[in-house]
Image (tube, rainbow, N blue to C red; front, side, top):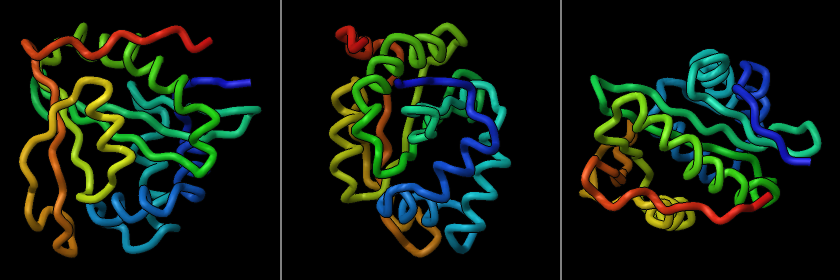
Length: 168
């Protein structure tokens, strides 16, 4: 059975220790931590028990973390990473994000929501476009080892993020 809950440090740590290789590559490029173990510890401390940090799972096993951080007044950054079991909850995550997560950000006053993603991560880029984000400029040398990233964004006045079909 699928579940969504506020992410605890233990949930974040589990997902982070078992994340997909491409997610690991992306997060190591933008975090201070030097390896997967340090990264899992750091992400658990940063995102566990944080408002607007959610864990999605299946059969009591954490699979995905979705989180938002307010960067400055009314501007939010979202992030997501998952284990290889992501297909078990992918449609439900999309439903939740569109029906509850992004409307909550708008109710909190968000007039801009953005997401940075490493160049070449086509699967995630397609999902971001599907839910209503626009693809912005390539940020050259954005990662700590010179990796290029793309900023995806939504701002007030753009077409509303897509309405979900019920996936229950």
